[in-house]
Amino acid sequence: MKTIFCSTLIFIAVLTARAQGSIEAMQGYVNPTADIFSPIMAGHPMTLGWMFQPQTDISVTALGAFNDALHGSGNMEIGLWNSSGDLLISSLVALTGTSTNSVYQSITPTMLTAGQTYYLGAYSSSQVYFYVVGPDSDTGGYAIMSPEIQLSGLAYNTNNAFAFPSTTEGSPGDAVVMPNFQFEAVPEPSTLGLLGGGIIAFLTMRKKIKSPAAGV
Image (cartoon, rainbow, N blue to C red; front, side):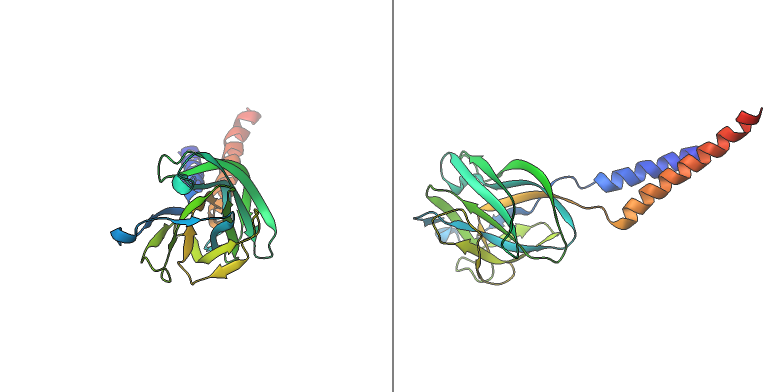
């Protein structure tokens, strides 16, 4: 009975640690004013995106962009920077323009720390189409974010190159809708402790059960 209990404890801990899986940072966006629901076009190449703060430690697993950002097929370079302007990870994402869903490219998992500010930007040498949403936008639109991600404002770089989007505007909730990413929440220490405690209890109980048999 005790062995079954320990096994169950381990099983529950593993399920808790893996429950969330990959989550989209920006899960969609809403623009309630139909007559101005049209994209703003960028006439020359620039890096566009948003800054954010994770509300818990996360591991970024994929970089992406909304598929209609090019209104056609082509590659878009997505980058993730820290507040010092250091490029943490980047990836080329192939877009087809056939839907408004985000398209992703898997990356080496990259850890981000809760409360720190990071910058997400997208760049293409082709003309891009994007929306500006948030409390400071003229459209009244807003982004639907995962609870783990707090928007801190829009970010961009007008140089004709893929570069750190160091120019920032707006307030929390503002963003340029184009880049996106997927992440996994890092298990809380209590969850890891539950898993470790379950394993130790299981091994200890197993040893006690085997010991009498060894002396027979």
